[in-house]
Image (tube, rainbow, N blue to C red; front, side, top):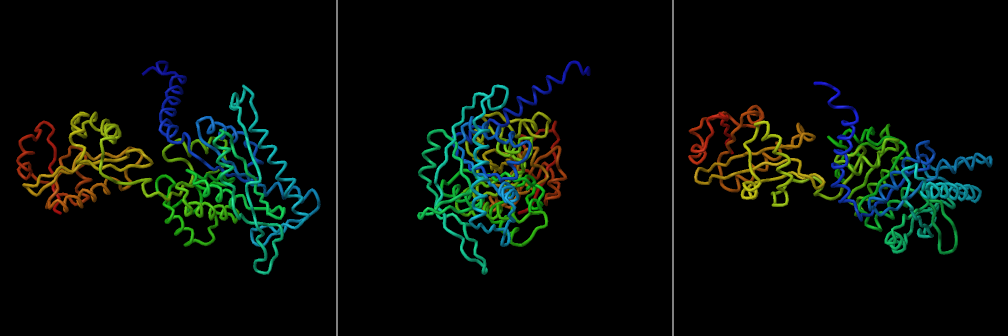
Length: 453
């Protein structure tokens, strides 16, 4: 084929259109949702920090209601060093005396103004062109002192006591971005230095945010914890807690990241359904995490239906057709029309991941023969070889037993070995129910496979 027939520009255009269409379901799903995005002071020091700000602005343009929480640890270190002071810690928790608090105030004020300035950019030559973002902040966090722990007085280091959620909701309702710093105030007028992760967790829990996202300067997808997350870096909350408890000090996780991980798990326990941990990189990690099916970081989910197997409904027909059409075109499956699928939909099961049908199968009972046909098995290419077809088979076997069936059968031309590996044996056409024998397609020469239940 002549390469000139497919110039690079055309390929790039196709990739762009495909990516935009792939993101469309997430654009619709995230519109109007509340996301809390937290990032550390280390991220703000990166030379590509503006790229993250551009992506945050794009989220806002796509209809996401945003709360930003920033950290400030390295900026405090810089202020301390400039004044000839040494940082004091008990474990990984800073001890904030009066002199250190002056550094905290200077660091927070300077970084906050830098963030607001970047969010105010409106140059047409940048991705911020035409954004016109409005940012609001306030004394929304009430804090109390950490106090004396293990004999150490943490002085002006505090912890979150409560958050003025109503005021933050008012800001979001005005289509503004809420920006919070790791600072809290007491009813007696004191200022406390807080952990940014604790602030983000408290705000996300109070708002019942749809997502809490931690942008880290490290790479969460490379943590030892991520080794257990299977195909796409996603874990049920309980499993994440189990893994963390089983490995008290993973080498790949710093003390500060571990504290953020604890805040992430606390947010999940507090009702935030999806908590994401992603790395800060110039290649749009935030957008890839939110607008592609599998993302690029770690995600903990507390909602049981993030990936589930259930009976199919009429609303699933479009997703099922998208799965089986390529297999029909290649001759693996017998073609089904939409009308036929609508009539048969009650016999189908689907596996749904984040609202997308990623696998399906059907069980057609022949009660007079105490047999059932396990058919129309299809798995999205991104999720094959991961046990999902086997999970559908187990569900079909359970359903068949409840119906009083004694045997399953399948007809296949392309995948007999998969069925044999899962307990089927080759049979004869004469072993099929008479209704199936009458319509058996001798041109396809499908192999008959049987499994006793």
